[in-house]
Length: 152
Image 1: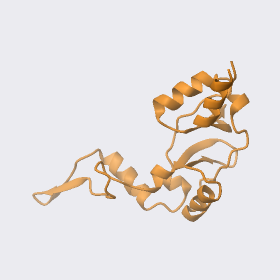
Image 2: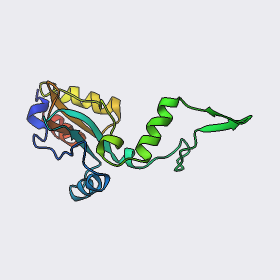
Image 3: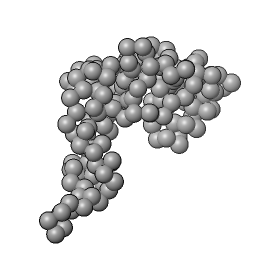
Image 4: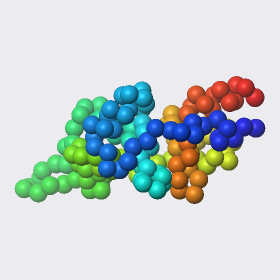
């Protein structure tokens, strides 16, 4: 059984929390990536920016931030205030720290390819950061896992 460490990209493209939005977009485009891990100067994974973080849509697919109604001169939030604040923060993001998803789904390097397959399937993500003791050590993708499982 192959481990994640054997099939992952051990030198993934990353950005820093202070990388500006243009820098994040340039990185995603240059490397043709749907997402990029955000690491601090010590190499610790602090978040991930995906294409979903860059486009804000409401439940019907329309780009929107209006998740509140005005009633009797007051504002009532239709969703949790925290979720609304998060959407506003991302809408006005100036850097990776502002737009990233914190505490992304991760996997350890000693996990098996089957473990990675289950995590990718259950999370719906195509790329999972590989973390050891909080530090980013790689990224494993759906293709990496499929190739490993096909080779067994």
